[in-house]
Amino acid sequence: MIDHGIALPYYRLHVVPAVVALASPAWQREVWLDPVQLEDLDYVVHVLFDDFCDADDPLPWLGQSLRTHGEVELMARLGTAFSMVLDSVDADASDEVYLNAPGWSAVVAAAARLAQVLVTNDHMALSKLHDAGHRWPFGTEQNSSGP
Image 1 (cartoon, one colour):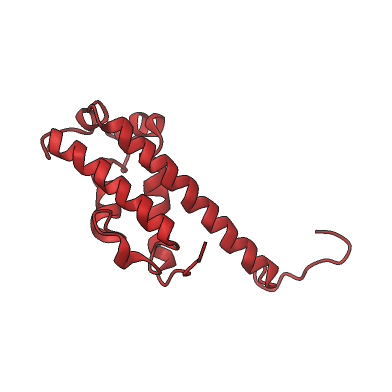
Image 2 (cartoon, one colour):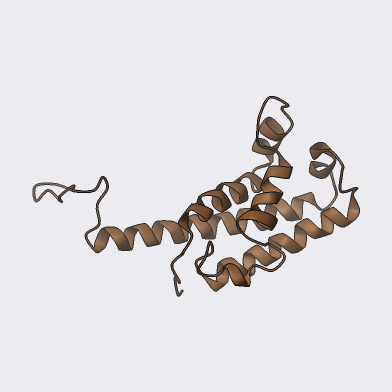
């Protein structure tokens, strides 16, 4: 795996939770269908298709908010799965209609696979930073008597 790093880490801070939300049917029903909550499907779609990535054409986001070609490929699969659902329901349909659409399980499955890869890649990147001597909080020294 080649990690291209990311030029826009703050973008990724939006992308990863949006993908995780798409991977969790329980979250979708508990949060998106609750009118008091701020997050809904529309928010997630804007994050992944408009603002911080383009799931329909994710390759330009390699090195921006996506780390690897594998992430690009999986994001494209997620975009395809979502587009299939979008084609089967009215674009202005409620979140509940989307969640009950026949192809929604494919969206959840694609998002789950992508979420696993995104989180794994972020952990690997953090581990490499740690191994290179970067510590958080800044200025923290490695203690010779413990981890």
